[in-house]
Length: 125
Image: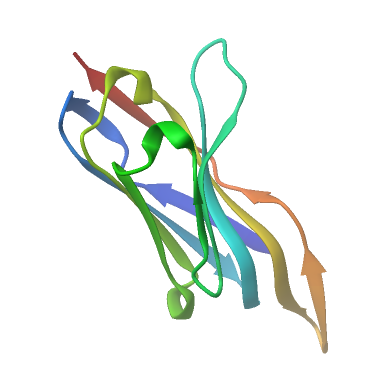
């Protein structure tokens, strides 16, 4: 059906930048919302940012002004530009795609809540 593959995580010093990418593959017709979540050790997974196919965005308060989410609908790819990184941004970052229309044989079906495998972001102080 639909697969999500993330890239771009790594180790960076506080104040540095990273850019995450997530490409969705499969027989995709369209994707409504794409987003980034993160989960730090011992904490619940939280929404970092998401973006609709029309470009509307939503951010976690603690990343506003530092992170920017964008997407390329033609490539079914979402990006997260992370600037001024802080140690508290350290987590596994997961890509999510929700409300996906995809081809299944001669028909089009809708699937929900697809996840990538996660990419580690570590910010050292």
